[in-house]
Picture 1: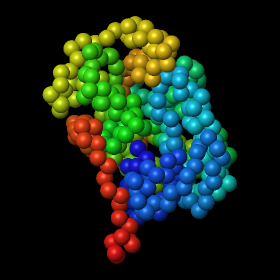
Picture 2: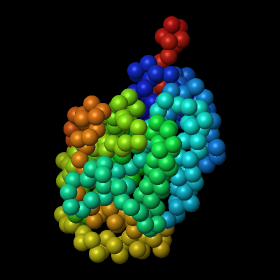
Picture 3: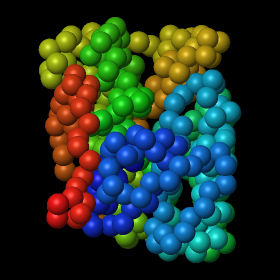
Picture 4: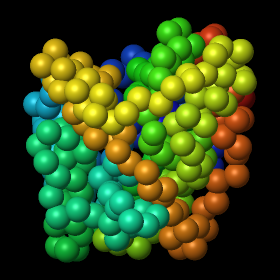
Length: 317
């Protein structure tokens, strides 16, 4: 997500400074087009001369093995960033949360569907929920903070990969013996980057915005991957009690693929409503799900990184 955001900002002529845990990777991606400094969100950070801060740094995994790291990065790291932004008197902070924080089993999920609490067994979701509370506390104190809740990003260059990308990668390498009866919402990662910029430009302080696009059943998505790749789609739907047993077993083994949190997500049947972002931010994603999925598949089959963007000195030379 971060690399696509940086490229979109650079394409608009913005001056971009990055706080990176691995500056070497950032240099490979952006060359001299961005200012890069080394840093770690687990420690206090410094912000100087920034108009807008995008806080994307997070541990995006599931399972209890990463619980302490998520507390240190997703929660305490957010406190460090906002404290630095408060001291620097920045004009706007855009906090990238997760749509998984929200829950509603009766109607389309909107920005109002924030739970009063999140159980500790859902480590990633809880870490984002706690980070949002920190953001709202700072917003109440006067720091201009906007929260965005992106859905599952899909597209090229998912190097980690994220849980979304791993779904595609697993389908390519192993296939899916069965699917859960659950809904997902996908958004092209490049259009997601545009949505983050729209939130910075037009988002209201203390408000949250769902960045959503394609609501589909998991089986529908796997059938789409089957058409793209020629690999077979699963023919069976696994009952949730079986997934729950697998999730409990995953908790014992420390799995980050099938654990209690991922099993809980398989219960979700409710689509997301992204109309608030369309109305207030003027942002409307248009790329088809098939186009995004094809780009993701193509990249996993041939994982190439684009050349760093040129800067004016390079052009002059």
